[in-house]
Image 1 (tube, rainbow, N blue to C red):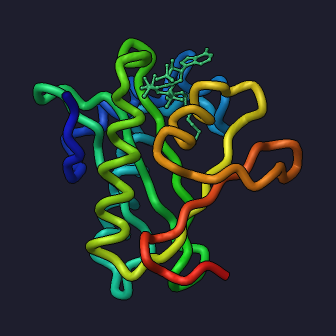
Image 2 (tube, rainbow, N blue to C red):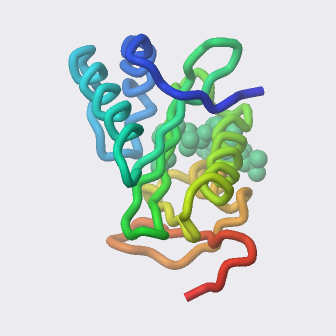
Length: 158
Ligand SMILES: CC(C)(COP(=O)(O)OP(=O)(O)OC[C@H]1O[C@@H](n2cnc3c(N)ncnc32)[C@H](O)[C@@H]1OP(=O)(O)O)[C@@H](O)C(=O)NCCC(=O)NCCS
C-alpha cells in the first residue's frame, strides 16, 4: 500500500536512488547527482509555493520509504501533463497504478484542472497499462510516443 506525500529537502538521497538505473530507460532523463537531486527538490518546493500554482509533485511512499514521484505540469489553465517514476525495486506491485489514481483524485478535486494527458516511450508497455487502468483514453501517437488523455468526470469535453 502506498501513499502520496509532500516532498522535503531531506528526500534528496532517496530521489537520487529513484532517478537511477533501469527507471531511466524510458524517460528522457539521465541519472541525478546528489546536487541535482537537491536542485530538483528545491525547484519542486518553490513551485509548490507559487501563486497561481502550475505544478504539483508528490512522493510515492510505502512505510516511510520514498519509492517514486508523480507530477502534474500545467500546459494551460485547465490542462496538465502527468508523469511518474518508480524506483526499480518497487515495480510490479501496482504502486504506479495506485499513485496515478490518487493523483487524478487530487487533480480533479483540489485543483481547477479539467483534463490531463500523458505519454510514454513506445516500448514502455507497463506505463500504458498504468494509464489505461486509470481510465485514460488512447489518443494516437505524437512523435512516435503513445498519447493518452482523461477528463474530469462531469466536465465538458472539447
Ligand atoms: C512504468 C512504471 C511507472 C510502472 O510502475 P509499476 O508500479 O510497476 O506498475 P503497476 O504495477 O501499477 O502496473 C503495471 C501494469 O503493467 C503491466 N506490466 C508491467 N511490466 C510489464 C511489461 N514488461 N510488459 C507488459 N506489461 C507489463 C503489469 O502487469 C500491470 O498491468 P496488469 O495489472 O494489467 O497486469 C515503472 O515501471 C517505472 O517507473 N518505469 C520507469 C519510468 C517510466 O517509464 N515512467 C512512465 C513515463 S511518464
